[in-house]
Length: 179
Image 1 (cartoon, rainbow, N blue to C red):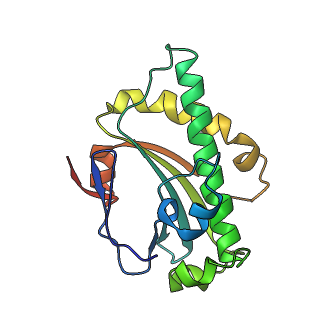
Image 2 (cartoon, rainbow, N blue to C red):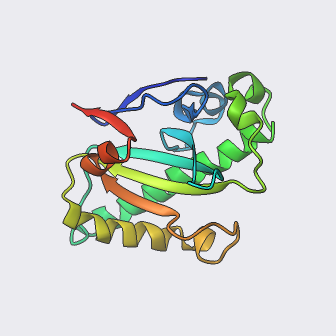
């Protein structure tokens, strides 16, 4: 499923170059397994300045609870963690052709992606969030993803988790408009 723009949580993501975005949440493979499986919105293929591939696993939210609002905040982090990890895992499974629908819907750039050198970036975009509210979210999400990132199971680069608001997403070219 190749798509250039995605409207989610009051933001328009993209446009992205053809084949760089895989709308995993709407994929046929996810639709077959979606019962009790939460997933992030999409995977985005970008490159570092030196040309190394980076797969961004992107989740969008229109709001977020504050850290002081326990247990809502902890539940929110658990949900985001689950969505990001499920999208990452399903994305790898699709790239490895573990599902019959995989190759038909996967953009060509993902089919030829060298998984041995690709990095991953888990990105949460929260619409309308003030910048000073982002660090506690980033810290909590990084802690939740610790077993994947910090223990180097996947040998990811530093700064693998990013929690940004719509203003920063616009600045980084992740979104084109806010509704």
